[in-house]
Length: 81
Image (tube, rainbow, N blue to C red; front, top):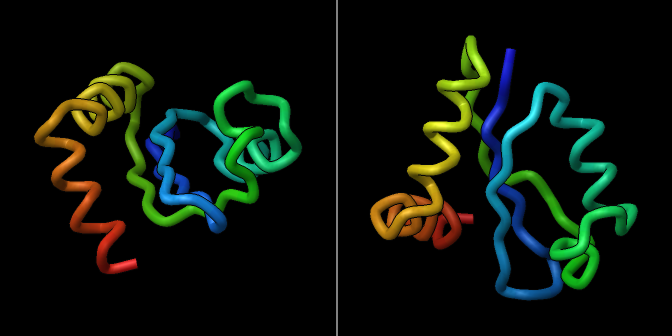
């Protein structure tokens, strides 16, 4: 299984969209400061995820969530969070 996930910074108005096969490990990596962008805005918490059968499907959805239409969709989620 592959997951597309959305993280929200608890201290800043920032979000991050990513793709992984192990969400728990990946969130720990973001919060430990291993990733260049996310280390500046940690700590992060998972606010949304979707599950996919293939990496290709997950990457396609990740790409969509990074478009203007996808950002509008995520804005609705972030506003309700």
